[in-house]
Amino acid sequence: MELKPTYGIGDFKFGMKAADVIAKLGKPDKMYEDEEDENELIYQYNKSKLKFTFYQDHDGKLGYITCSNPTLTYQGKSVIQAPVEVVINEVFGNIQDWQEEDYNSFTTYISEKQWLVINAEYDEVTDIELGVPVKNDEEYDWR
Image 1 (cartoon, rainbow, N blue to C red):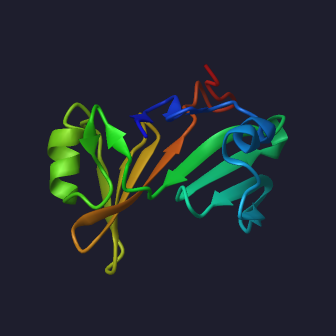
Image 2 (image 1 turned 180 degrees about the vertical axis):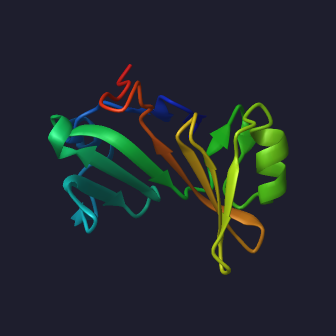
């Protein structure tokens, strides 16, 4: 499964509808509304270790993906369970705008330009979060 910043992961592209994801993966193991935003509906797939967030206020388009699948790669290099320093400096070496936030038990590395978040515990990447890029304050870039 290949990570494609600003586009999606594998066959899953920003702007897809829930029916498109269901056609590829089947019925989700869990469906729930985001506690902080009632306009976000999340489909969770346990076996694939993927979560898809659909923006209800944007015609139900896929706008955010979280992945903890150990088969995730970027440019052919493994990401999940890899040392976070290697992922930041070597795998994503072309991204320079990382902001680090330490929460004691885990650390996040955020690239706002790529709308990419790397979460790490014990100095290993545990999951990746990827969002649809933003054109401006009012528009997403659905590509």
